[in-house]
View (tube, rainbow, N blue to C red):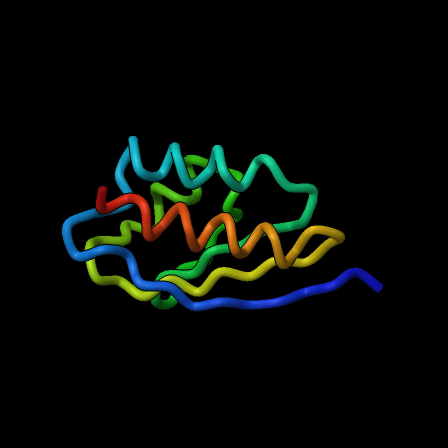
Length: 89
């Protein structure tokens, strides 16, 4: 059975998930085999789909729930969390 895990992170206050930050997020997600999802409020998206991530409409300070299922779930979540934290730089 594939490993699955979840992690909650908060989008930096100065950043919204618009084109450039969403692109970096999706590019990070694409490096992994695992199925990756991101939730913002009541909306959920495939973390590997730029259009789905943009449709979340996440703004600065929004809590994001990241979930992963697959062989590299843990490193995928770590990379996505680091990506979100790094968006403020």
